[in-house]
Image (tube, rainbow, N blue to C red; front, side, top):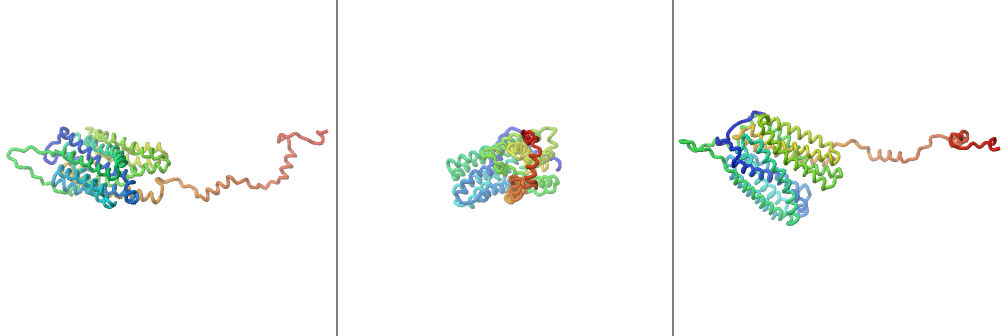
Length: 439
């Protein structure tokens, strides 16, 4: 998938691999948590929205879909903004948009207005934060970049475990409008994280003028790199099914008769494993002997994820689903920790801002196709996996009738039976009474 590109950053400054980079890492951890966990956390308000606007679950599910579509689909726009204005200004505006969208949603009177505020405005704000934060993180870390990417990626499961119960608590106490208002204020922390993204500046050389940047706003030359094309296609195909198991595993468990509380605990298991899998994968990928082969490690993580899905489809009880969530959490964490590290290794720092935007755009199409297609297939078949062919109800009823029906007449005459019993009474445990013995 192409060789690794080694450079010292867009301004010729060597990555510090520490120092203020740890503050940048913390900001990226928070931004990643909000970006990936927020579309899932708002689902706790869906029932209240259904009751408020008289709509169905499919209508409310569009909120999360629009959020994810904006997060992925606006990648090229974010790339152009970053290359034109820099990471920090773009993130500050994004933080304001994310907060404004949720605050405005608390005053909405129709579900369409919620789509525009929570889905479009907040989704755009999160996108304007997510991509620049990754760019800054990869500028501040070089030798420790795999570990830094793994730690930043851990923000997704951590925030998911925190935002979901927080959203439920806010809904119980303040309703969905009050919850949206408070979450909007919480998203202002994105602006705080943006302030941490201090740009790296090259030291001025004597007799030299200010450095000129000849970088394009959106560098499409990355498509000339065969490694990038293979990466983009493979990542898009992977995303088609990557988010389906977390979406349907709880419903599948309930379909097997598992209580609601135990079924919801499956996501907790998956998230808990994911928290530790991402930093661990980043640490392993950063080892001196492993890092040159990080592309192959990422390929293995995708294969492992698909194998876990196939094995999980055979689970027929709660214990099997718990085992599936453990292995899926490991593979899911590996993919999350390595995907952007491998992309950076393929295209380098100079083209990373354009490459990540184009990759996210391609993945946006897969995100919109994958889970809805799984839902359509489930609606059509009403089963989560292929089951053995069961007998038709008429055949089953006939078999049951045969079991309970008394045996039919076998053609033996009762008189013959009586004659047999009289002829051989000793064989049946009876005492022989004949005229001779009676005298």
